[in-house]
Length: 170
Image (cartoon, rainbow, N blue to C red; front, side):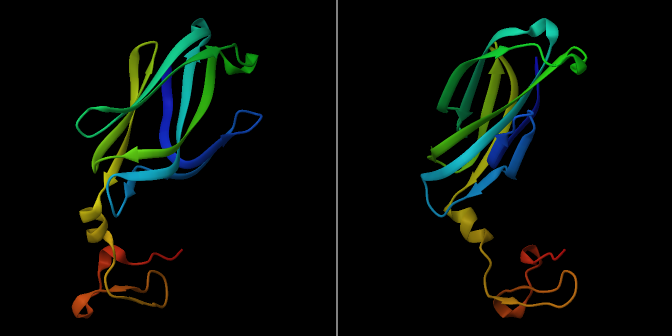
């Protein structure tokens, strides 16, 4: 079995036909204070298995903090059944796990580690930028409206345009 899709999003659903609908894919959160609580995120996974792997499988998901300590662990089981005959020997199973009010105690690089039957398959990275990073990112000065494509941007101290904060039109 493989995991061929793994990401974080603001929201995701699976319709009746098995189609994934994903909104707001991200890999970082910027916060003004720590610890911080994120209201909701969706861990989106798609498992791919051969028909020989049909049956019961254990799935483990662990959120690891920058120091390697486990913040959250979720263990479960997945029963794979045969898919439609047109799948040519392959079963694809989308999965959306909504996680509400997760607390991140520190800034740094976190990871959602996904294992199937005790074997690690994928890590989904998430970077938490703490107060110093949030301040460095925040634009300073005033917005200067532009004309034409890509015009405008933040005018920083001394009237110098900060190119890293320019608006992109179109």
